[in-house]
Image 1: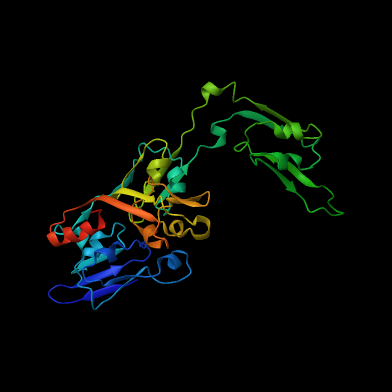
Image 2 (image 1 turned 60 degrees about the vertical axis):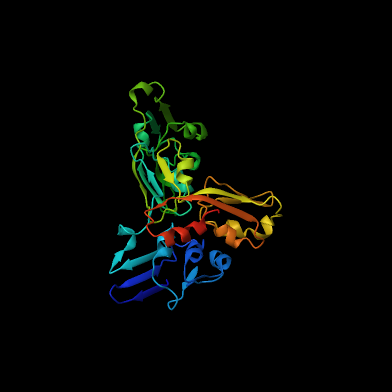
Length: 334
């Protein structure tokens, strides 16, 4: 973690949080004093080098806050007298956002599984099997030979055998075979597999289906905006449109037509992408713009400069300084 602090009429401190940094270099691009230097992006992303994505020259940094304001991932924070500038009216404010409507959510977990930064937490409770299926089952312990076939075959793991340590004093293999009806789905596999017809089972679910309530799935879904990078995976995979994402930038990104990608032997772009938006298909890099946040990390990582990034707009408001407007415009396509 890099930091710079100075005291005077105001106490200003700039902190870089490497755990939130994606190595995009936006801060370095806009720094008016070139105080921010990027480290070796690809080796850091691959875990080959243990160091921060960037370093801040304490002598050159003027603690203006332009880097902190322009970082869409909140990896840089400038505090003035202990207060974050993102809470101050005279500094820019990002309007990119992500949310999940808990009222619409069906707790399927697709978003949580797909999220590249593990920013979505799902907790759900499912109904017990016995609430959805009905039947009757019985094991004739006198006929049972304790072979264990039913236990091995049961797809619901509802059958357990109370085995004994066999010895000359107690030669019995097991005390009993038990079926847990809270797990049993009354499929009848145990009955059909039993070599001595010791199991009787009847499924009444079909006959009583009108009396059985539909499955009620409850839960909680939490999106941690502090970790979320607004990539849009949750919005794209959600089957009920419960997730909504506004990305930090609008624009285009593509691999140059005249570029021969080394894909399988390089895959630098895929390794540094924080959004899991790049895949190697048939030996070449393919960028899915649906999941890209246009951060530019892949552009900087590509050793052959084969990726073209064109940002058209940035969802950053309240830029009151003309010099800041001009500087931030460098991030957009001219």
